[in-house]
Image 1 (cartoon, rainbow, N blue to C red):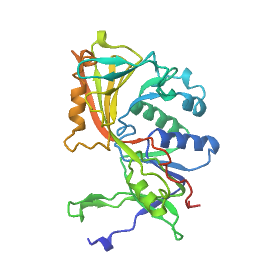
Image 2 (cartoon, rainbow, N blue to C red):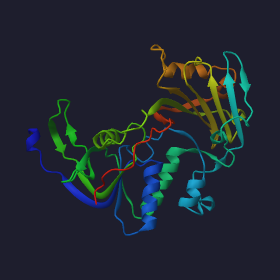
Image 3 (cartoon, rainbow, N blue to C red):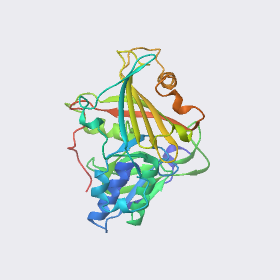
Image 4 (cartoon, rainbow, N blue to C red):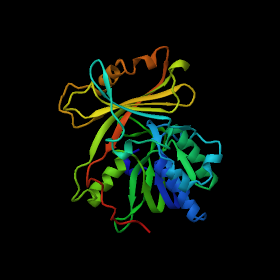
Length: 323
């Protein structure tokens, strides 16, 4: 079957199409239904299930949940472990210097915050969204932006299934689905493919500084009970990175004997031989943290790009929207 002979896609119409079932996409879906329960809202998610691609080790400020879902604190939610202690260290090869809290920026203070599995939080939010009438389609990646007659965004199309390595249809081929909306919200996370296309098409990065990215690596460990310190939030910078390379670590204790440990390397590093994964593994041998993992078991591992703060880098929000 030639490309120009492909059957037309089936289409579904919605008021709002949301790409990405992360915290932003799901919170937006819930809020839309709160504002108008008659709105037809759909969320499309590339992961096999909601939360499958959420890798963040997360400490969250609950103010957003307080405003979005008043009364959530009385429910059985995955947001349980309040931060009990903040620690921030500068590391050398064999030792650590704990920094006092007062010179650190306010965002490093986690008083009143919670340590969570962000994947579990997303699954919980998805249940809230579905209960409000939001349709959620996991396992379907938004592969194409749909445009209207005047160049406005008109929705997205999911990818075709059953395509061979040569790009041609195989047996069992089926076309993707068009999800058309009056408004389309892109909540893809860092470096989303469709978001990059739209930034370029509409010039949303015009007169903006270049975005800044990092690489985040994370492991989830089940540690020995005597090594677990519920609610401990610990960050470091310094070793194993040199003074010319930005980055650092996080280590969060939560739930039952779980520790989320991660390492971030800013992607403007100059050393072409630097391997972020190897630096992460070296970090875990430091005397400050290595005892945490004795008799423990690594449960999961992941890595992904991160957006990092840079002044005046955010895309302009002025662009044409389908109506």
